[in-house]
Image (cartoon, rainbow, N blue to C red; front, side, top):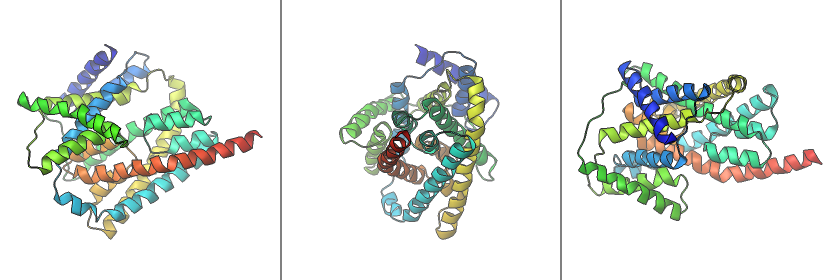
Length: 339
């Protein structure tokens, strides 16, 4: 019931944002309102399984735009991948120094507060190594929230872009049946041990169907619900956070996010210079935000979401491969400092 209650509040925030003609209203509206209520101490929460299901719906929706020609285009994106690796490495090093030397946090907490990876995994691994889980959780939540908000505003004011909200279409009832494939894709991806199974599994199923020539059109109100749930989920993570503690962390989290955005912008400019990839596409693919949220902004802004998803998913793969090594090195460091 708390999930339903939270999402109803989020939908109210989405409606107000749409009425005020704000950019990306059905996601930013719930994010703002639920965050405010959470900080005020009102109990809000979105069940993790519900969040993952709707993340799968978003993945399924993105996959419907897949075309066979994109496979050949992906071979030319290697330069973007290399520059993404450089961007992640620079962001990790600079922000670790910021949290460690300026914020005076221990090295483990500083590293895991700076990792632009999946939040839950980063928090759990950081805590297991002896880091401050609360600092890591708040820093990571603020990173995701601030990247979504700032990126949306950047594209809102960018010439030629349009992030204005529109009222959802009713759609055909039979189109709703496509949503039943979401848990199937999730289950299949988990069986194959694919990272981010809840997102990539449904995406791959709809992509295969799209390439096969099957026309898939999810009802607009389903996508509106998806945006509301994802926005509400981000906002609800602030529940239980003391205002004083949030203000203390937010100063450094805002600075760290700004550093990550600047590095992404520089690497995007390099990508634009070396390739024929537009600056807006490269920037959205390199910002340190969540895969689903950045893909959503790309779609609304009229940018190819497959390119954006490809680069962000590659970032997740690299972090998944590197995090055990980072954890091992930090574990050895911690054992040395204790002895």
